[in-house]
Length: 167
Image (cartoon, rainbow, N blue to C red):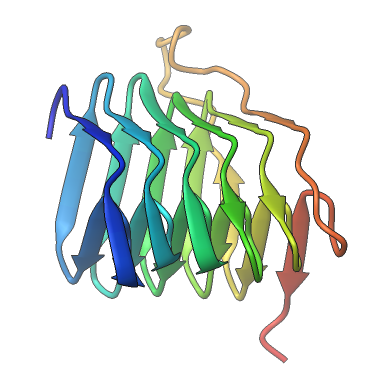
């Protein structure tokens, strides 16, 4: 998907207000904006199983909310790659105002995660048996090798992250 803009998409009783992926792949490129999406789990996006989600170049997610987990995204048993994504002002009631990972792997580079909130655990990130790894970019691509920024994430338990082991 390229140059997609959605506003106010909703999954009232389901998962992923804008995008639901199960055992499928999606690549989102250039200026994909989502405003005011909501879902029970995964405010904007829910990714599960043998799925893969790749968000590239100037992808922006703002004002996303989930009634339970993952204001921006909930991922279960999958992989996600974020490259220069901007996630701002997302909220989840139970946990992971930004992302809820159980178990999943996220690789990120040059992203910004700002003003993420949860009334429960992990204002920015809630993860169990998961990986959240910074990727330095590609050799010879200085523009690509940017630092990821985290700011103003809040929750009663774990301001930015709440991490649970397998045991």
